[in-house]
Image (cartoon, rainbow, N blue to C red; front, side, top):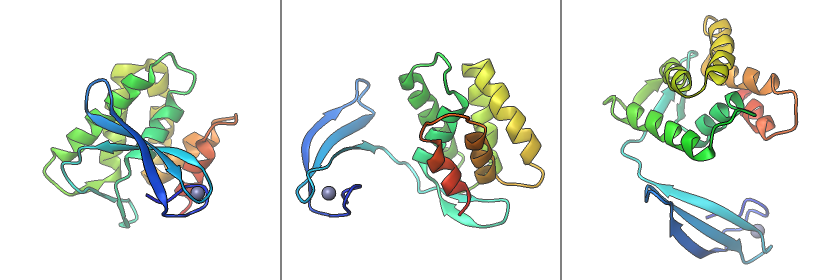
Length: 166
Ligand SMILES: [Zn+2]
């Protein structure tokens, strides 16, 4: 696993342990070149998914990106990270169970809306209002960028908006 700080591939696993529900393995890693420490997660993946954007462009499905967008919608809402993780895992399983490797970005948007509706009203309204304004002309990636831009504070949302521009 490449070190996220210095780019070296000379990294080692220091510690591995399963999450409470045994659906993920968490590994603490250390870089032998710069001493940087980071964590990776191992999960079951039933299917290689590809997202088809509105423009027709194809991109590998990225669970982390989905997780970030959901966290932006849920910013400052009283929802445990564990519940958010479960929600995202549920969405991913549903996508995998659709029986297709290619998934339209709007399908993902719809599943996120359904899930947020069940989880938290405020987050749902946040997500839905942006989603509805933008679904005509733009794709899901742009939506994520808009959500991030409406996030007036610090946070890691800069990453989401950066990836929306590519
Ligand atoms: Zn390093």
